[in-house]
Image (cartoon, rainbow, N blue to C red; front, side):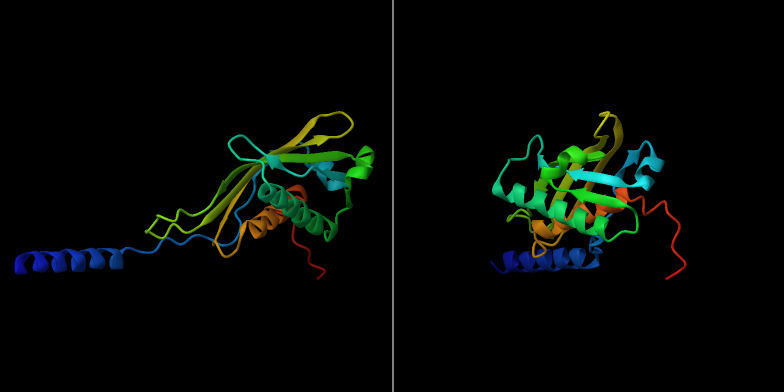
Length: 184
């Protein structure tokens, strides 16, 4: 019996030493850039009336109250960011949809919670979207995008959804392509 206890102690000590020397996987809290393409950057720089259609659940994602609340938080994040920008974009309500110049619509493509059985530190939540922007009058395709964010469970999906909205606004406003302002 003593031999079994000694073997168990050696295995546990060796296993702990192995995990101690393994560097922790660090996930960035900041959002990554939105992946996508804009076909006519000049059209986005002009500004105009932007209609945001709340995102619906995509294939493989259940349409629930939770996904509807996330969609509204995306609209909130996008709206607040667009309204605070120097560009001439006006975010429209559904009642003003007829005045839209461009329409942004998309889908929630993934919503993942951490597994309660995961013992190796995979305690991240994940939210992903994809969509497109079209010209309201002609129906022409203007842009497409994909974006995903991860966060801690205590952050919550609504916070991730709002972050996605802000990131999509930065994508539409072409913030990564504009030179920094020097008059601040």
